[in-house]
Length: 484
Image (cartoon, rainbow, N blue to C red; front, side):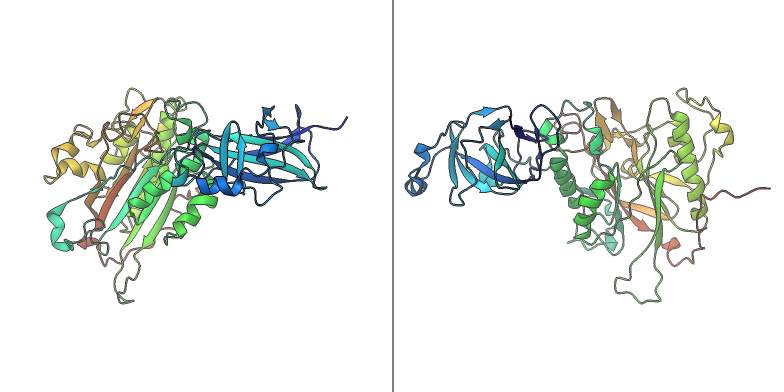
């Protein structure tokens, strides 16, 4: 008795979305086991459901010999009776019947991206395994639910502080005074590995697939037109295979560092202003940007404080060289927490009630600094040019957004853009979201593909900092000095 092989096909979701690539998982194995198959090749055919058959097609096909075919195509055990169906033998065969419906072929590769023409119609994938003798080993037919339309994006606009309008071209509001300022985005995009834990059951499965989320996230990020992107929770394979090449198309240079352990807390770079047609001898602004993702966990308040203090310890050395500092990222720390107070106030006088330090780490930390840091979004409350509707999205006491994270387990602010307030000036901020703009849904959702929201600010280097002859920061500001 010969072995009976089957083609197994799985999709992350049974609901296709127009414009989002379908990339099924396909494997061939012996039924009921994981026995390795002989050498084989796979052939694929994608079909779209036809609700009505056009007259010209009906005349052309006349269903030729379809009447003599078994069009019931009964599925069993995840596959079809491979003795009866030669679906992929004829290149002329574009119309088939199956599952009581009529289908027209729309693709012949493993992957398929539904188009606008597919909306409201089901898709059908026929996968055929063929051995090296050209004999069909097994056939699988997978039918999806109807293709749905991509949700319409919600536009987020910049708040421009018009007190600086004398520096601007009034006709250029979308990306104001690019030569005079720079725009920085910070965004925790939610790693795909966290979406399979069952923590986001409120979100439709199709909106949690990486194929959908990556495209939605990319479109959102690019719509902000930022000069500097600081992203957190970017998986290494997603960076290499998707984000890096996509960003490169638009001229972005990318630096990536995979998080490895608790003392690897940030990616820090020093950037110099490009020539932009200026004289080679002209002074150029230099900034330091730190992108960080601090440790999470309800019982890790000591670890978070250690990481933040360690980050500042090195940045303080760079700050002493006269270079403006930007710190972007997910601090996993609420406003008023010990790490937050350390950053903003420059010290931690007494610890909060929630602080836990079983190992006595704080005894070995320098719990003060002199970097003069401020949170960019506090400027919303400082400015008389910001409408009350936006100010209502702020916590007046903490001077931070009401939330940057809106998920089942937590609603609050964890993400920040901090800057050297004595060397940089905020002159624009991305509008904050509220519950209505989230469609009163927890995150992630079909509209917003992360459980965090993006923050973005326009900065200008203060004139007093321009043309400064910066001192060279140490090669490794975090290097520990050896003591005898």
